[in-house]
Image (cartoon, rainbow, N blue to C red; front, side, top):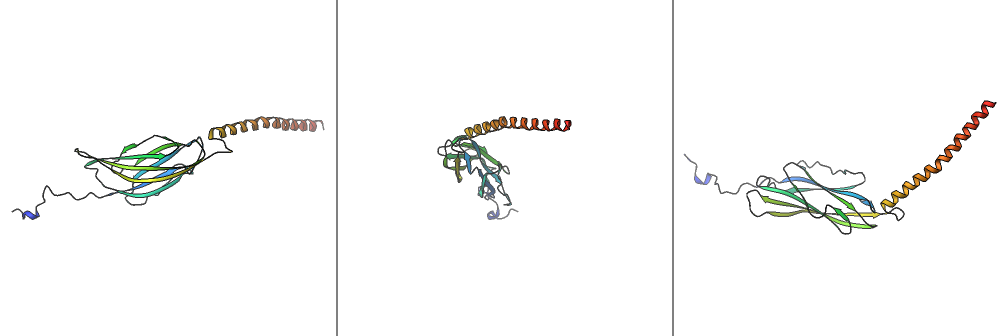
Length: 202
């Protein structure tokens, strides 16, 4: 005997909502950068169900910032694409524009940008992160902003020199020091040799 109609699940009923996925967003960037040199900005989105991931810098001296984001778990019905972009006026940024990575269950995605600053000063930028939800069975896709992270980098010079010029001056200084050092070493050697000969005569 079948149960009452009201107790039979309908095939047209809305499925229960998916459990949200908890992820940790980590942004890493250099607080200062020598003019003409290049450095890296990193954005990572990794699963953090227990909430115990501590943001850690990959490069010594970099600053890090972390926050928790909750994403809808739609992996079974949608293809999820994470898209990131770095906007920083006046800076040379590679890659330019939007870069995307497939976001898979339980797996992290990481974006890297190379940044070069042409002159001294403060450069302010924004790291954008969007998610695109593309239905696997076709239909209209959805694009939503997840976060906008602000960064600031100070471009500095060494005695008014760019990074390349400062390295050249350092190399010249080392070469001059070596040239000056060799005669001094020779004088010491000759002095020791004379003392040794004098002792033999005694």
